[in-house]
Length: 68
Image (cartoon, rainbow, N blue to C red; front, top):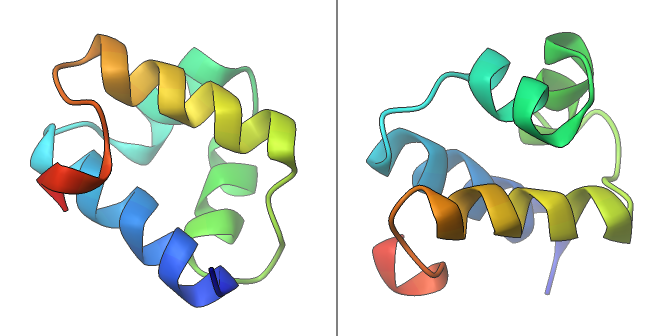
């Protein structure tokens, strides 16, 4: 999956759950600026960060891609 698509999925899921970038960032243990850079394709998220995002999204009411 292309980076652009992964980042768009993170954005869409976050918006669908009405979470802020700061809330996601805090939950996964990174800074808001770092998370913003991921969503805006300035940096490539590590597998570990993507896994943590997946856990936060699942806990907050969706299992992932079907909500996007």
